[in-house]
Image (cartoon, rainbow, N blue to C red; front, side, top):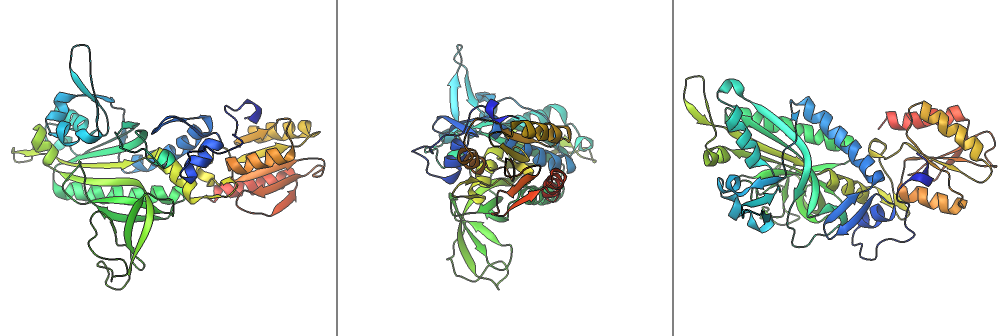
Length: 415
C-alpha cells in the first residue's frame, strides 16, 4: 500500500483530551477516530490490526471446538425479562422503543440469545455439548467512557458460549477455554495474570479475568510474586505485602492492569430461568449447564499500545502489525523504491511504502509513530543496498535487498 493513498494520514499533534497512551498514539497515527465519548471508528490501519488479532483468537476458538456464527444486536425485552436482567442490568443497558411501543435493548452480551437457541435445537444429551462464538459489537452505558479505546460505550467483543449435560463437562471445557485464552494472549505478545473476580450481572459465582499488568491500566489486581495466584480488587480482602493465600510462600503484590478477557462458569441458573432442559440417558429432564467466555479485540489493541510504545509512538508486535515493513524512499530514489515495493508485494510481504514528497525527518517521524516493526530506507546514501532498522532498536544496518528480505522474514517467522 502506498502511504500517499492511505486514509487518513498521521496528525501533527496528539488529541488535547487524550488521558492514555493508546488514545494519544492510536488517534495521532491514524488507527482510530472518535465519533463521541466511548464511540470509535476503526480506520483502515486500525482495522488491519483488529483483523490480525481476530485471526489469532479465531484459530484458538476453532481448535477447542468452537463454531463461529453471528447473532443479532437488537434484542426484545421479553427475552431479557425471562432472566430478570431487563431490570437487574438496567444500569448498563441501552433501551429503546419502536413505533408500536415495543421495547428492545442493544446487546451488551448474548447469554439470553444463546439460551433461546439452545432450547430451540437441543432436545437430548446426544445434542450436547454445544460451543458457539461470534465477533460482534457490544453496547454498554458506561457512566464515564475513558482511557481511549479501552473503555467504550460501543466496542467489539468475541464471545464464546458453551452448553453441557453436566457440571463436570462444563468445568472440563471451562479449563480448556482458560488454557486457550492463555495461549491466545501469549501469541498476541502479552504477559498475562489470571485473576479471580466477581461475576457482576452475569453470575453469583467467582469468575476469572485475564489481566495485562501495565502502569496505564484501569484495574487494580493483587497477585503473588512467586506463584500464579491472583485476585481482583473487588474480592481480595487482605493487604498488599501479606503472605500469598495460594502458595503460602510468596508475597502479595498490587499492580495496575488492563482486563482483556474473562470467563464465567454460569451453572444452571440461566437454563432454570428460561426453561432450557434436555433429556438425559435415563429419560429424565435436566437443566443445561452453561458457560460464557469473552475477549475484547478493541481493548486488546489498546492494551497492546499501552504495553509496547516509546516516546515517539507505537511499537507493534510483528504478529499484529498492520504491515510487515515500512518502506521509506527519499528524493531521487522513487524508481528504485518502486521496484523494491513491487518485489516485496510479489513475495507476499505486506508493505507500506511512504512515497510522499516529504522530508526524511517527516517520513521517519511518521514511521516511528505508526510503529511497523521493520523499516527499509532507500536513498542516495544506501546506493544499491537497503537500510534496515527494527522499530524497537536503534541499530541501523546496510544490507543487500536479499539480506534485508531474509532478515524481515526471520523477524516475522519468530513472532
